[in-house]
Length: 472
Image (cartoon, rainbow, N blue to C red):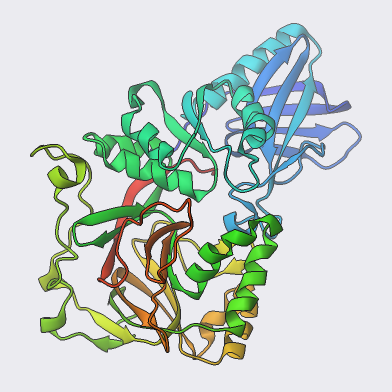
């Protein structure tokens, strides 16, 4: 997408900004004002901080969404990207909705400035029509109220037309995005946890027009990765885990009444009775990580089990010979140099973003669009060392431990085994969804799993396949 080019004319006018006399200047993509009493000049970047503008007589009212508090208000907070996990943990990128009131000397001046501001905002290529999917059941069942109190005011201030639909059952988001008439919309917004977003991505990639459909999450290039077991495939966005993290994430659901404290509580329980898993991890290292692990002989390459085979679309979609949907990234086995690590493992974490939660930086070197997955693998070690590693995860320092292997991969294959000293397997969890479970248990409301525990599961990265809305 080309950089937006706002109008270049400059407007200068005496005005009252938030009640204080000032000289206001509108130049390019910036509104600035300097108080008459000699105070410090204030600035607003229109593209990144101004949502919309309306004219009421002599007054211009600009709705802002700013991290700097430049509007002088203290409105209700809305964390951009989910607190620390989205980069807002230090307060630098936590945004607040507010308003700047600019009172002109005449209604004609206000109308002229209002037209100029709207022209500039229109030049940024923002979406005009959105389809919004709200999950009213996730987390603390607050999706509906978040939409009404936090999202809707921004949508209305920006003058965006929207259609809102609530999800009613598991995989409903996937059903919606698979059948949605995308010609009517510029983008899809999910007011939910990561689960509905992943459902939407999978629904878009199952469409015949997937190449254009996936761009409806438009604005910033973004990795997706494809998880395969034989001919079964699943597209993920954020992470895949096996071992300690997956066990805590999934098994702690029975303590959801505790809120976020359930994770810390169940983590301590798991450390006290630490599980170690046999198995093997094979991977194609990114440049700079070629010395991690041991080389894999050609006779044991990942090609032999068919985990890199293309999806039988007719079988997967019941289309009687017709094929549709994205088959996943292709890789030429003869050009790949696989390496391996052998268990036992305490935890295997594969991530596309740095943070696992607002206070856990599991993959400190991860980037959304670098074309690689970051692997953080905790090898067999004493339980108290594991506890120490978790305390170091707040800033990512744990990856320096000799018990941790940290590296980037273009493709990775997990061959999950049984727990050490037990006949049970573990859990493989992707973006909060159980892909495979080998411990013989399943909650009453837990659906049949997409993949089997035991056979190799392979992940490959497709760089820049999807695009997402993102503040500049």
